[in-house]
Length: 295
Image (cartoon, rainbow, N blue to C red):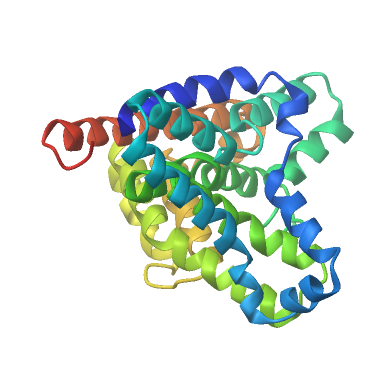
C-alpha cells in the first residue's frame, strides 16, 4: 500500500506542478496565521512551547488515518494517503524551479535567474543565503531534494500520512516563526525540532547519494561537513550538500568548469542524482513490502 500510494502521489505531484494556483497554496502557513490573529495564539507562539502548534493537525490526520484503515474500504485509505502526501511535497516542484533558473540563465534574464537562485538557496529559517555561487547553488539543490521529497517520503514510511505531515510542518515552522510574532527562544526550539526530525532521514539520503554517485568521493567529502553527530538542521544541510557534491564528482580540480561554464549541466546532474536516490529508496521500500515489513 505504501509503495502504490507513493508512486501515485509522485505522478500526481508532477502533474499538479503545472498548476501555479495549486503551488501557491500553503495551508500550514494559513493555519499559523489564523493562530497569530488571536491574542492568546500570539502569546502561545512567543514561548518555546509554541512548537506544539504542529500537534493538532498531525493528530487530526493520524486519527483520520486510523479511522479510515479500521472502518473504510481500502480505496479510501489509498486516496487519503495520496492526498496528504501530495499536499506535503514541495510546496513547489524542485525540477520546475531548477529548469526555471536554467531557462533564465539561457535567456540572459539575470534578474530572474538571481531571484530563482536566491529562492533555491534560502535557509531553513527563511533567511537568504550569503551568496548564490555555483558551489552554494548545487549544494542547495541537493538539500532541497531531501527537504521537499526524500525527507517527506522517509517519514511517510515510518508513520504514513501523519508522518509526512509532521515533517512538512516541522520543516516550515522555523521560517514561519522567524517572520511572525514568535520569540527568539521559540525560533531556536523550532530549528532544533526540525534538526531532530531531519537527522536520520538526512543521513539515509546521504548514504544513498554516495551509493548511486561517485562513492569514493562522496565518502571522502563526509568529514568535511563536520556534521556527523550534530542534531541541528544546518548540520544536516551541510552534510547533504558536501556528500552530494562529492557524489557528483565535484572536486577542487574541476570547480572552475563545473561551477562556472558547466553550471547548468551540473544542476541537471544534481537532479539526476536526486532522481536515482528516489528510485533506490522506492526499490528498498518494495523489498520491505515483499518481505512483509511494510504494507
